[in-house]
Image 1 (cartoon, rainbow, N blue to C red):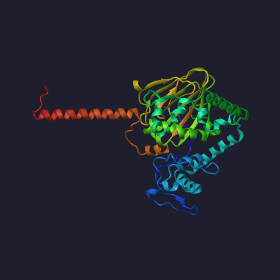
Image 2 (image 1 turned 30 degrees about the vertical axis):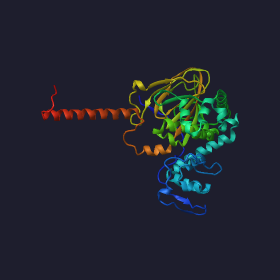
Image 3 (image 1 turned 45 degrees about the vertical axis):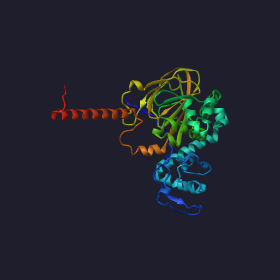
Length: 397
């Protein structure tokens, strides 16, 4: 069976990681000059996590404001403290080099689509649109991240379970938050129905659900990724760019007898995926996992040790690599709704373009490498046996 890939219908432009040789405003913000083609004007490979990025929401731009806030952390040290206008023009010129006119036009139309929704939809719970850890998260999750820098990684590890290789589960969201988010999504869908507004669904595989970013939650989810999911990913998913997550796609999906019933076998358009059950009352709907694969091996067979089925519990999260093949069993009764956050790394995606051979995170790549190693060892042993036999110095008996 061919594996269908779930792809978001509107990727934002990705921040590049290669050399930034572009037009840049000079240090005092007056006039424009050519950026020197030396190492001091290269983007950083890893973001400066301690840097507080500027807010670009008030600028009329051809790229999404959050992309600039994210890319700013990759700026060379001598530009981090420049004026906002200087940084904006520098980053804009970089992005223009990496995007076509068609892509910019598409992104502009998508921003206009979002703005039309946000200007007309009246939120049910305004407090959902600003991240508030103490009211969103269960105590164990919030406490783990509140540990001091020295102990934080170990504190986060302590709340995680790993029921299958590369799959981690943990309690995350308070019941009240789950209920409020469910009600907010239902209120949004009611507004869509009443106004007959045509919305974009989360991806090519789900016919029901809503993109949270599209009706005002983009900034909240960006903060969730930056302050919490990226830290988890630095610990568990370094091999797929977990240290450099810089964009996301956040949405809610719905399953039930009058909704999507199940979800086919697929991989996500993400480096790391967070999936949290919100409720409601339901039976069935288990997630099934079948091993991590690169593009070359995505349709290869599943090995027994790669099989894992996960039962949903409201408020409990599961996090995994986007390339971890999975699907959802049929929801046999009731209605199930899940929050998903596809987290992406532009740095990792750029680096992957130059990786032609073995990928250490792909289960099949590892098996092929092990098989080649065993064949090489066996061939070497045979070579030694033959050479020693020819010399008469080795007795096979």
